[in-house]
Amino acid sequence: MQLQIIRNLINIYKPIKTNKMNTIKETIYSMLTENTGTHFLDSGGVNGRMWQRNQKKTMQDFENEMEESYEFDYKYNEIYRTVSVFHYLTNNLEFDDICDHFNNLQNTFNNWDADANVYGVSFQAFEYLETNFEIDIQRSWNTYNGESDLSQILQGSTVLINDEYYFILQIHNGADARGGYTHAKMFKSGYYCDGMIHEYLFEYKDSYEIEQDINEGYIETFTDYWDDSITYTNKQVKNKLETINN
Image (tube, rainbow, N blue to C red; front, side):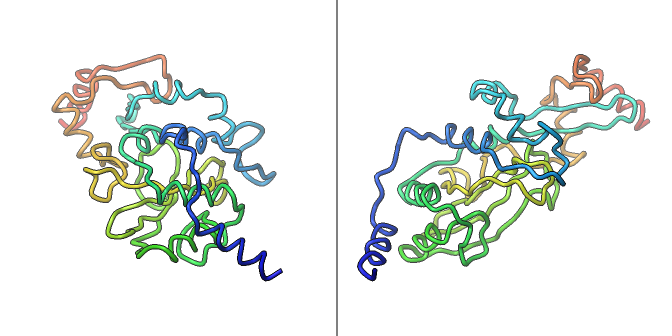
């Protein structure tokens, strides 16, 4: 019995042969389509949960999404920005050997028992980090709790490992924000990102920033908030907003 326990511990900490075929895009697509369950008390109905919607999409469907899109409520003069979670997560994040080993442990051990301020992490995966590296959990967060334009909620932790930034991330695939999160995966911050997930695509823009982008011509097309068959040009939206401001 004791010998078997020792063998299990050795298996946790020894290098794991990883599947390099899993690219960032493949991993994010797998997370976006991960079945995170149903509950009769949630608001997902029959097929309204995000994982159910996403499973109808191919990788190409996600790749064809705009990085950010804008809707205009012509009646109430409101602008709504949406940032594609797929593009937000696949532009700069990277894998290294630490991520590969951590993610393989996550795939092997189906528990969320890590004794730390992280979400969706197995005891074994976090034990691997603690045993082998100098780690500092900078913060744990949920985008639902702040201003966010992301198409889906993200939950995660920003972690320093050997003075380099990593993210332990979950995607919310359910209906209500209280549950329905994927198993966590670890990613390394991109070279130019300085601790950010994406180098130029911001999670949130306020109305002043959006108005600046409109005035400078960075946003060319808007979809009607109520009817996506209707579109507006930059000039049409700008003129409508100017009549209100004047």
